[in-house]
Length: 121
Picture 1 (cartoon, rainbow, N blue to C red):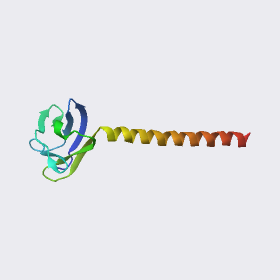
Picture 2: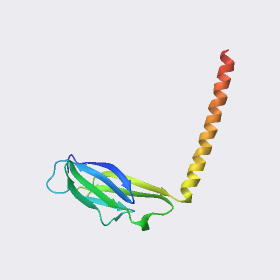
Picture 3: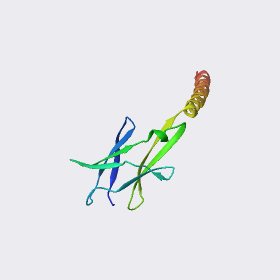
Picture 4: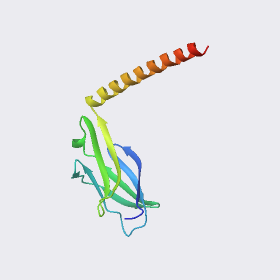
């Protein structure tokens, strides 16, 4: 559907929620997938300012690592939005590695700044 815009509004209690605005007849037809499998229970309800989309995330899909979900126009296949859920040990290791890299870069910048200050005085 030309002119359809999907905007995330919240992710609370395992339900992703967004709003759809655009010009179309009837509710927009959306398809939400995870690993190319369609999620059940997607709701589209009319509101004063367009349409409200609710995507319940099944607990069985939440596991270690990154779980990606894609929201697309069911008629055209056009991707409208996506979201990811990160969880588990893999996440904590990624954060620790990223923190180590940030610390190393900060130390390098501190040394370069100190050297610059000594050389310019």
